[in-house]
Amino acid sequence: GAARELRAQLDSLGLKACSAHVALTLFENELDRTIETYQALGCSLLVVPSIPEQLRGDWAGLAATLNRLAGPVAAAGMRLAYHNHDFELREQNGKTGLDILLEQTDPRVNFELDCGWVHKAGRDPLTEMRKLAGRLPLIHVKDVAANGDWAEVGYGAIDYRPIVAAAPAAGVEWLIVEQDTSKRSPLESIGMSIKWLREHTT
View (cartoon, rainbow, N blue to C red):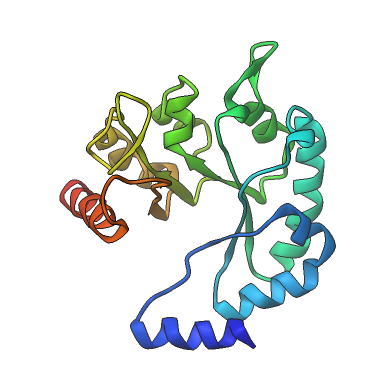
């Protein structure tokens, strides 16, 4: 199938799919087929990338859903993770949605912290990263310009030096560059971000 063809292409290029964003509906409605697809790709981290409006706010309910999915994913030799935007960082009674998810999920539920959205929510990415330590195989390094536009890593308002320095101790395995929009061509943007990261990581 298509997954095997893509795997062969990745292998021929010496590339690895470290993770994939998989819609929550696919997990809920086609769990076995979804797991098989990503096993064929050699991709061991499956990430819930976002949740629909109507689920936002019911963090206990979402935690229960993630807990239910984490077992079958782990049984297949893979890991489940959850990716945040800004709405998970709003406080309810002194706790953010992300705090509640961390408290109420099984340790088999991991996280992919999007540092750009954390910054946009007015919180400190380094602090949030440390809270998730040990359950944070992935972080999205995306920078934000002073005017709120997305920027190349190292060229925006987020000080990424302490973040990338602290990432290994937090258990982060992959720094993933993501830039939703760019004033430059995508390849030029990614080149700038990768160059900055190569200069600032050991």
